[in-house]
Image 1 (cartoon, one colour):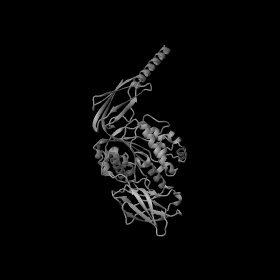
Image 2 (spheres, one colour; image 1 turned 45 degrees about the horizontal axis):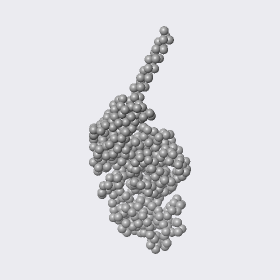
Image 3 (tube, helix red, strand yellow; image 1 turned 120 degrees about the horizontal axis):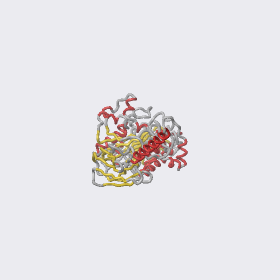
Image 4 (spheres, helix red, strand yellow; image 1 turned 90 degrees about the vertical axis):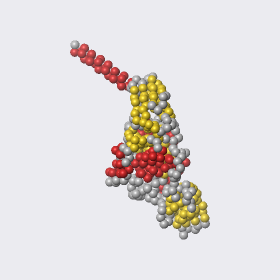
Length: 478
C-alpha cells in the first residue's frame, strides 16, 4: 500500500510539473525593452518580438490604427513582426494575442536615442551629490516630464550575443532623473522641447570600459592591429576589458529596437593602450552597430576632455577621434572649454555637453536652423615667409579669442623642436610665428594632455586641437 501511495504521488507530481511546464511556456513573452511606458520611433517600421510556442498564432493590434498584424511562432519558439508607427503622439496601447494576451500601456510615439560609453556618459546627478556637489539641483527638481522616458541597462557581460537584457521603461521624474545619465537627460530634454515630440532615451554605459568591449569580438579579431591593441588593455576588478563582452549583453539585446540615432562618450580608457588605432576601432564599432540594427543611423560622439594626469599623450586619442569623422553620418563635439578641474578625469559640466550634442542632432539630423553644431577645425596651412597661416573650416563668421591673445599654439622648424608661438587672428585664419624661427614648417594647437585653448567660433564653439605634422608626437610635445 505504501509503495502504491508513493507511486501515485509521483505520478501526480509529474503531471503537475508537466502541466506547469505547458501552461507557463505557452505564454507569449516579451523582451525587457518592450514594455509599458516605452517610446517607439515615429513614422517608421518598428519590430515587436518575443517568445512563444512553435506554430503559435500571434496577432498584434494598436489603438492608433485598425490594422491587425500577424506572426507565427517559429520552431525556435520565437516570433517577430513589424508594425507601422504614426507621427509623434500618444499615449497608445498595443495588444498582443496568442495563447495569452499581453497589453502594453502608455506607449508613446516619438524619437528614440541610444546613449553609451564609459563613466562620463554614465555620470548621474547622484554621482555629483556623492561628491558633495549640488550642480543641476534645480534642473533635476524640475525634471518631471511625461514626454521623456528612460530605459537604463545595468552593467552586464556575456560571452555571446544575447537576445534580452535587464531594465524597464520609466517616466521622467526627479526620482528617476537623479540616477540617469546627465548627458543623456539634458540631450533628450532639449530635443523634446525643440521637436515637441516624445523622447525615449536608452542608456548602456559602464565606467572604465575601453571601446573594445562595446565592439563585437569577431570584429576585433578580424583585424590584427585591433587584436594586438586589445591585448594591451590592462585588466581591472571594476570593469571588463574582454572584447565584445558588454556589446553581447548590453547592446545586442536592443538591436531589434528601432532608434533615431546613437550618442557615444568614451575614449579615456583607450588613451594608454595603442591610441593610434582608435579611429579604426571606433569606425569599426560604429559599422558593427549599424549592421546589427540594419540602419545607418547618425552617430554623434564627445571628444574626450583635457586631463593633466594621463600617463601618455591623450592628444593622440583626440586626434584619432577627429579622424573617425571620415565615417559617414557621424559628428563630434569638442568640450575642452567645459572642464572645471584639469586634475579630474570627470568634468562636471554635463548639461553643457548634453546641450551641444542636442544642437548637433537638431542641426544635422533634424535640419533645424540656428543651432551651431560644428567646432572650427583645421583645414590647411600656408607658409608665408617666417609665418604660417592656419585656415579653419566651420568658421565662416570668423574666429575670436577669449583672452588677450590666442593660446596653445606652437611652431617648429625642420629640427622638429616646437616653440610657443605668437598667434594673431585674421578673420577665419590664425597667423602663427616665433621671433627666433625664420623657416617654420609645422604648427600644433592644444596638442597635449591638459591644454585648454581659447580660440572659438563667433557662435561660441571651441576650435578643435590639431597638428600639421606627422612626427613622433610624444617626443615633440612642448
